[in-house]
Length: 123
Image (cartoon, rainbow, N blue to C red):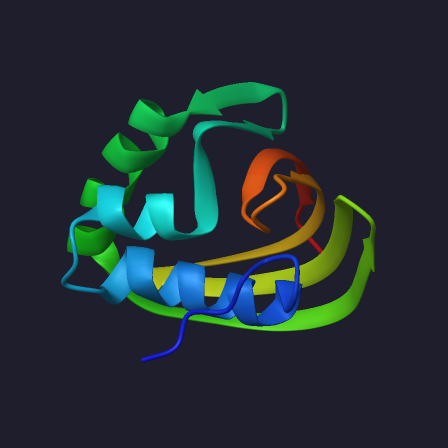
């Protein structure tokens, strides 16, 4: 399986990362490190998540997630910056969650993400 580098294919990264984290068999730390630097910081609606919190978040999602569909509307990559607007429609043990997500990221020289700032809203 080829793994998209965020710098080269931000939409492919999103699809692969979500699928691997939510439904994969690999250790979440391995998946996270494939796409993000060890010092990654992910701000989601004002909540700061570091590497350890992102890994901890993946474990319960894997137990509860039954479906996760992404509809990627817009992507932009410029130098070491990326921006994506997408809708995520997911099911966690029967409950459906739909969110429109605005993601802005900073890339490391190797193409992985080192910082993400994300805002979500219900459509």
